[in-house]
Image: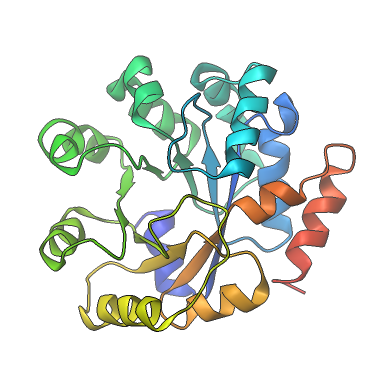
Length: 255
């Protein structure tokens, strides 16, 4: 059993935090990870920046641009993460777009993930059929989970297919908008979350996009195994007082 599977077996109301590698400062990546674990995060998603982050809202787009301007790329990220497991024990995912991964080489990428102790990846624009036909074996060889995204428009047939290909969790987007929107739990949203719950999927689920407060986190946890916070955390980071800004943000969830 890997770290990700163990987490979902042992905990409920899982709090996952996303942040961008190399932001606010180039050397902050592992510092933020360690401080988040100390402050109570159950799962970390480290974004590798890309120049055209189509699914991201203004906050994460800006953090990606700053990280790229700082000099962050995948080669440097893996160098930064080589001592990750000396200070971080919670599961860690890398999240980003397929273009940098292809440029790095998918096999090289997966091998590097395994070497530094990364547990899986979220690559929103990697087509499911391409993953299944070309890369599933490489991910499995290196013990990596590939996390698929589901939207309110995803068909039941596709969700079942995703469930069959998954071995970590399924990422439920609260809407089809970009990141950074406020979670609006309307009748339609509740119907969507309930529909997914009624499918009795084999994999746990996490809700993301729009989770920005204890209230929205608790609401999401009513329908899933936990929730993912990204834009709200990135916005709260203070480059001049990193540890304090992380602890202050996390206190609302883990007092």
